Image (cartoon, rainbow, N blue to C red; front, top):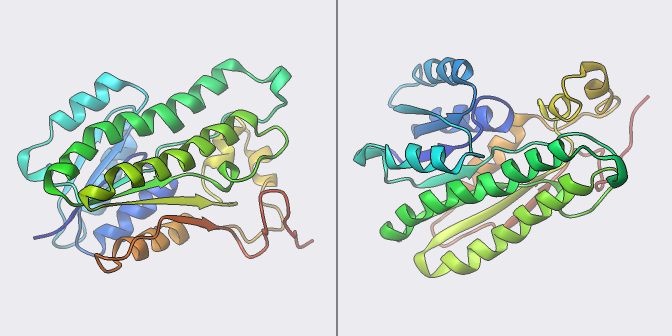
Length: 253
C-alpha cells in the first residue's frame, strides 16, 4: 500500500517540486493550494505517474474554517497521512520596521505561522491516532539569522523554527518525526511575491548566484523522509555554495 503525503502550497516552487518527487516514487499525493487552476493542472501532471493516486484540496491555509472543512472532508482512505509538508509560506515587502506595510505583516503572520498551525492542528491528531508520521516544516535561513529590512519575515520564520522544536518534543512519545528545513537563496516565485510582482527587482536578487532550485529542496526532503524508522533529521539549513549565511554571499560578475 502506497504511503500518503499532504503538501500545502503545492501549486508552485518547493511544493510542486516535492509533489512531483514523491509521485515519481509511488506515493499517494494530497495537494493543496489557493489557486484552483494551478491545482487542477498539477493534478493532471501527477496522475501521469503510474501507481499514484492524487487528491486536490482547494483552500487557503490562512482561513481556519476552510482548513478544518478540507481535512474533515477527506475520505477515510486518505486520512492515513504518513507525511505532512507545511510548505505554504511567503515573504511580502522589504522595508525598515518604521515604514513597513501592516497588510504585508499580517499576510506573512497569517500564512507562515497561523496557517502552519491550523493545518498541523488538523493533521497531527490523525498521526497520533496511528502512532506514526513525519511532519516537515519549511522555514528559512532567515529564521536563524536576521537581516536589514527582514524584520517580520525573519520573525515569522523564527517562529517556524521554534514551533518545529516544540512539535518534536510534544510528539516524540507518539513516534512522530518532525523536520525543520531552512533554505537559503532559492530561485522560485519567492522574490516575485516579495516585490509584489516586480520581475526586475525579483531577478536582481539572484544575479551572479547559482541559487538553489525547488528540486534541490525536494530531493533533500525525500532523503529525510526515506531514512530508516529509527532516524530523524531534526533541523537542516541548506544554502547555495555561494552563500555562507543570510548576509554573506559571493556573486560572480
